[in-house]
Image (tube, rainbow, N blue to C red; front, side, top):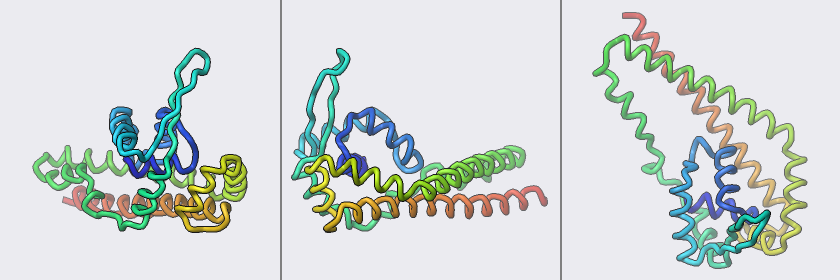
Length: 206
């Protein structure tokens, strides 16, 4: 969670609710949007000096906006190239399938069919998102470059972390890897659908 929050704050200053909305829209399949988890992580990052908070009043409401600090940029830069930990990518829900043989045949079939249906919905949703981001890629990159350029501190942080010389190159790289993540999700969903359909056929065959 701390890595995700630092990533978001490298792109812009955000309130916790803006962060949550960003996660819900873009990272719902890989990251929890629990306010409790986010608040705990934000407190840790504040205590360690990796992020800062500023307060203002808008429409009689206190607004707490978070930003990454120089110390946070240094920490993030050290972490960004660290290989993914496969142990942390394990899905506890898969344990249900591991023990599914304990259920009746009727329940096994219903379980598998329901999961296939959910996978298809997820696959269709990812296809639509992928098509949209591909069609709007250049426009979004130009818009983000223009927006981030208005904040010289944010722009400098991104250039420092990425070791690029041009802001457009940084934004394009970020966008490319977000598309790669979508393609990964599409590939995984497609393979999962094929796998579970095979299991379902075996169940129905005997």
